[in-house]
Length: 216
Image (cartoon, helix red, strand yellow):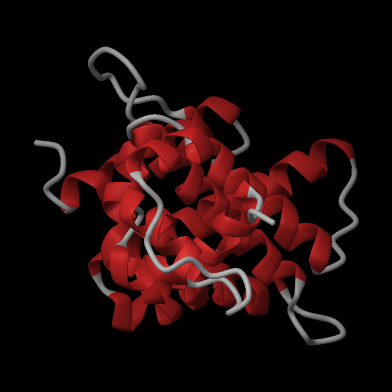
């Protein structure tokens, strides 16, 4: 029986460490299946396109699957009562094996599928917001109404700043995260305006992308 695209996508995720977020990682996924199902040859380009999307859309499929895995990493934290600090650190750890590939991956997500830039801010906002929601829920945050939005905006901004720092200085990323969390009340008060929060997140992503040299 042929493996489903979802199973192949799952098999491709560990291959990102060596192949990056590439169509090659997707092609090699059939070689990483259990012995009774594994193929002897990688998927053809035609098969990769049929299963995961044409051109760079296949890469986008892989990147989004990897981002979903990051949320699962937060959910699977083993501590009975994880703190926000624990969970954000866990998410930064998830980046480490593929850190060198992430600037290009984020650049691809923010790039329009047709035509020329400007970059699309929605993937950056979605990325940070989903992490903030998952961290708040898993840590037992019970904020309501307006406080809910302020709390998640604070968490999203803290995480984005820490992730940007991780790209430029991996060895000090956790200390930087700690410093942000220690002053998070100040961060929260500075991002009550949604437009300011959105601008900060997207500017941070643009900084990540430009620091990699992908965009001039």
